[in-house]
Length: 126
Length: 188
Image 1 (cartoon, rainbow over the protein chains, first blue to last red):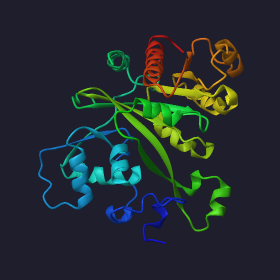
Image 2 (image 1 turned 180 degrees about the vertical axis):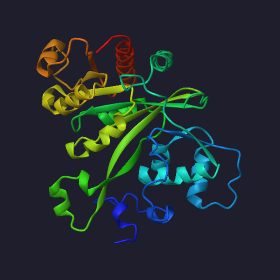
Image 3 (image 1 turned 120 degrees about the vertical axis):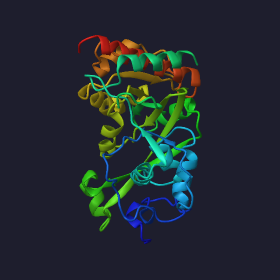
Image 4 (image 1 turned 135 degrees about the vertical axis):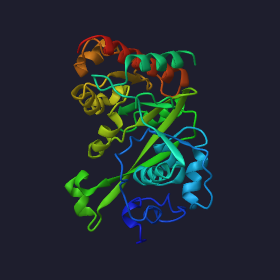
């Protein structure tokens, strides 16, 4: 069993090409210090030069040259969302990423009417 | 956050029984190649049987697929296929929080498999549409029989669709957003 064992997929080996065990990337942390970001939160790279950051951090900053969600970061890095959340939070804290959380919800728990209308207009135009 | 002029993410949940076409629908609409993500789950989230079957294992992971539609420069819609089995329902809560609503896909040959998804949406007051994925031999099935069988409220849209067709999937999602928008203006 590899050191990062508990994070590994139980039955398949589809993540065997992982660069390093996932918990090595996050220093053993499985939760970020900040509030849990929703999986669809978008991250965008800032102008700050990544310099000699570790490979996974540089990959995230590269992905985030355009808005990209936490869940996409996880999938592209082949790590669980929780790990992506830690990496992204660290990069945001260090000023390399801007995080855009989902819009505030209305009384019924869903997006506000104006936001839904904008979505509807966009979908109908496709 | 107020005053945040950055890009905005929205999400829609695609639910239904195993093999009903959730992945097909997500892929028919997504502009990005199919991606799977993993969510770690703690032993507490897993059924007792699973814990005893995996001695010493504290967490396992569950794969879910998702897709993306860029609506405009600053609005991106994500589609999440929900994991089918009930033991993964803890993930539904995270996916459902703040979502636009859910597409509940139904295979009329196995209609009962959508019951849990319908129950979930009703209990959480999530806007949802029931999408009858047209498998061979079901295309003439009357929609109102489905409404009765699922005991759906009259306002819940039911539509026939083909999850393999991008246009059909897009219409389904549009119907859901229309329904969600309508609900913001009426008390429920």
